[in-house]
Picture 1 (cartoon, rainbow, N blue to C red):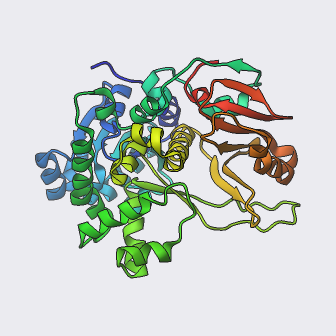
Picture 2 (cartoon, rainbow, N blue to C red):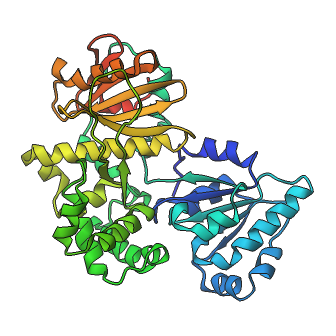
Picture 3 (tube, helix red, strand yellow):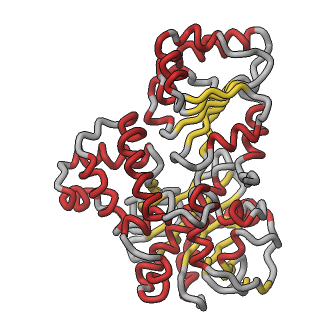
Length: 414
């Protein structure tokens, strides 16, 4: 099967030239192993999915690290399964740095967020860069190489008509590589197996989950809240968990990349407004979200526009996070005032702010830009663009730096 290039490749290549160690995390089955092995085809590759490698690393971690070949990068896959090697990695890195060989030494991969692995982060603080590989973006699946966040900040927009597309097909294939590239796979069975593996392996690494059925129930309840402000107390009540246990289960889902939160925008502004402080919740993969809803995406698209609106927003949230992974220092938040003016996503870099509102309606109107205008007033000269993403075909101006943008902008080359 031909390799599909990933947007993160250029950033990894730049990082490995200056840093001794890179930790590539991300959800299980996003293609981390394939990605790093294609990135450095001459590297020494070791996976802790191999029982022999795992047993050897745990038996004598110092010797295991010392036995690695020199003069080439070493890739250690699923590193979270053998925390015994962390201090010896630190010593190996420090020894090589003292000899002036301080770049491109190790690439580690793992299916757990670094924040959930304190032993790893403490051992390698100051020596490690962290990158995140998520499921296919729409442009990765379409193989266009587009990073639409880069386009938003750099491009001067002008009126354009795009070609037609099948939105449900795009959302369906912006997912994990295996189901995206093999149409014969039964996706319901695939996601069922995925969740079982997640509960039996990855979540157990980051949390003491004693009742897997409650974890699945929690994900099903959170699926009904995707794209909305999250009331943790209410969600805990519905699962029958006390609030501390609920928070632990939710943290495990975040740290294994099943869900993520977009925090509220909290920057100072000259507006006399109160801003919502609650985060919004999204699932890292819209296909998994649809599976948890026990619904068919095409049927939802044709018969349930409210639910489809939430799925469309979740899809855009995922696309933002996939493209944002190549931009260090970039932040993503949501903007909502107490009188319900909102912007779904606020993307901030040192050199400016872009606002993104998501609308399933095929014909945006001036009312859809109210929140973006308020954001522009709040950030003033830092405002670069405000866009309403919609499932149409025309890129149209709605005022200074305000545009209605077809969703195909995310994967089409200009």
